[in-house]
Length: 270
Image (cartoon, rainbow, N blue to C red; front, side, top):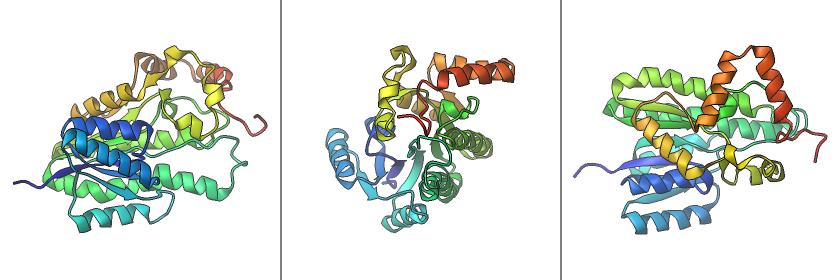
């Protein structure tokens, strides 16, 4: 009997991460669920094991800690859990202007959304390449393709990096059976905006701009199976991304800056 293949998902306790867990379990994947909230992870793991007869393991970890990725990898090695899919989903927004959060707050966000993402990929990718099979989904954002804006200063640049990183690794891995995709959702119904205190702003936006987490995740799984380098969720978001490439830079920046103030919190705003 072959070794069980696991999908490792960061930020798995809620939002897109929990949806990835549910949909991958439905497809027969065993799971390694990573997040800070042990109780939420245990509840989700037990539910998915019962519903889909798969193995679901949990690792409580805070990716803001510099050694978190290494500890996760070593635990998987010790337990002999073979990771054939990696979903780097963990992330959050940090509202306000650049000089408002403390440096430890910035550093924590960089660790969660950049350093741990790259390190986990670095640690698990070689075994996928050797096995000539692997799936890596780097959860980015439409923000990584859009013009820069004031407020939430590091979020879009980090997501832009994630897209470029995923695309480069996609080109390297495709000859070895390793599929790598950057997933770029726009506004999605999750706890994301509750966590960063901007929900009241989000509620003012048209419902037509939003997608469900289930839709985003289903498209992400389909994209990585098809080995699509970059997946932009929803036709409206695809249109926005197209506009950023086709319209003159001055015009597209002005359009974005005019509308971004509806939901980007600045330091002098409540």
